[in-house]
Amino acid sequence: VIMQRAGRSITEIFQAYGETTFREWESAFCREFSEPAGLVISTGGGALVSAENRIAMQAPGNILICLSISPDVLLDRLKNSKDRPLATDPQRLLELYKKRLPAYQQIRLKIDTTNLEPSTAAEAVIRLYQRELDRTRIRTRVQSPEGEYDILCGVNLLSQLPRLLIDYDLRGRTVVATNETLAPLYGQAVVESLPNAALVTIPDGELYKNLATVEQLYRDFAEAGLDRAGLVIALGGGVVGDTVGFAAATYMRGVRLIQVPTSLLSMVDSSVGGKVGVDIPEGKNLVGAFKQPEMVLIDTGVLKTLPEVELRCGLAEAIKHALLADPDLLNCIDEIRQGDPDVLRRVVQVKVDVVQRDPFEQGERAHLNLGHTFGHAIERVSGYQWRHGEAVAVGMAAAAKLSTAVSTLTQEKADQIIEILQKAGLPTTYSSYDPGAIWEAMHTDKKWRSGHSQFVILEDIGRPNIVRDVPRDIIVNILESIRN
Ligand SMILES: NC(=O)c1ccc[n+]([C@@H]2O[C@H](COP(=O)([O-])OP(=O)(O)OC[C@H]3O[C@@H](n4cnc5c(N)ncnc54)[C@H](O)[C@@H]3O)[C@@H](O)[C@H]2O)c1
Image (tube, rainbow, N blue to C red; front, side):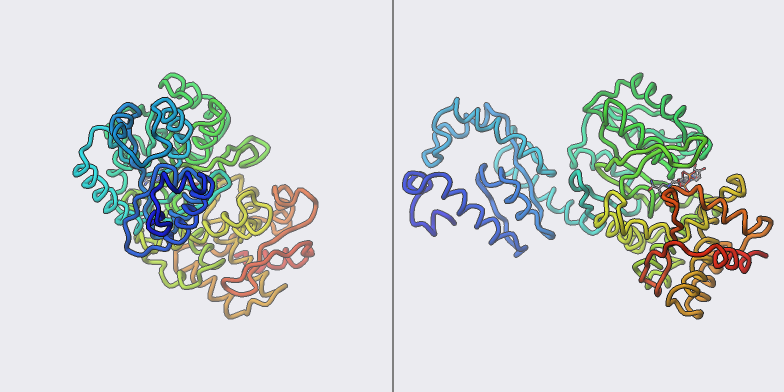
């Protein structure tokens, strides 16, 4: 196209205007053709070296594939080429190849054409294109400070993991880390399906989300031969995701991580956003890191073995997402319960949108704590006898009442929220604990460390906000009203 427009060959363009001008035209071309328009665009090797061009060509709806090749075959194929000004000298070509390689490695989809004829390479392109097309239907792309990653959400995705690892170029020694409950259910089969993987298990339960388990994981990783180029797959609920994720973030200063959440809560909440960490006796999640995964793989089929009580806990977080940003989801509780991938993707999208806008929890991400200030305090006064999701459900009932007391949420809407929680089988009241003790327990909340109370409220369903320094009386009264 550039030759056509300039009315000259590439060599002539280079001679007349220089490479810089040619690259500028190339960039303009990439921008112009970045709009998906049913085209197959074959670029020169230099076009996608610029990150800006790569981003333009990967606009939503486009599929970018890198055809890679070994340097000796490249030299052989180009030896008679007349119109490649940068490929005339083999030594120079090799240097250029090495220089450009890091840029090519940024392109996720690759086909190695070293041993392929043009026709078989074309077939490989078509196959990859069709697979990608299928995948775009199940994919949510997340922008994070460390780059992009995909959340894939669908049925039976675990069986596709071997293929996915190849397509996403996630090779190397692999450790599948899971817990004792999930190892026989899914872990062993996953390890057996992968060519270079070892299984590592941790005990089941929040009690083991601690530094002792992390240390054991480091040692198991080392014993399994995991090196810096290795890959850790965290297969399990939020406890596995957080603990194994933290081990992956710190082992050898960080190895690549894939999150495979298996509980509803971890699918819609903990696997997204990059927060990993463990508990210490002084508090929950007090030690941690941000570790963005290479991919999150949600196989909704695994929900069939999730105990009902755990499903309900996940529903609480899903309802929270609906209340924060997608009220229509409140009409889809049954679909969420059944693990409908299309609906789960929407629930996940709420968290994705928030963490993309606030990756390091400096502002808006705090909205995800709706119901959590109350919930955490109930968990604490119960000596962690309450499940997190159920405590959050009571917390959301309290937050609904607070929203009516100090903001604009109508009484009718607050009642509606409580009814939705109850219909989902979640508690909205508590007994036994003294409201004053719950208020006191709130003061140890991480978010209150600066000395000011902080609550997430709803100005309306779908419109969260934060209120600070709410007087004790208001909170204690609300806690009194939901005590039975
Ligand atoms: N990192 C974050 O951003 C974030 C956000 C929210 C919660 N969390 C953390 O997540 C944890 C809670 O996660 P959770 O609710 O998934 O608890 P969990 O990981 O303890 O899982 C609950 C139980 O369900 C079992 N289980 C999970 N998937 C199963 C399946 N498919 N079939 C059968 N059994 C299955 C587990 O073995 C466990 O016994 C807490 O530690 C919390 O702090 C982290």
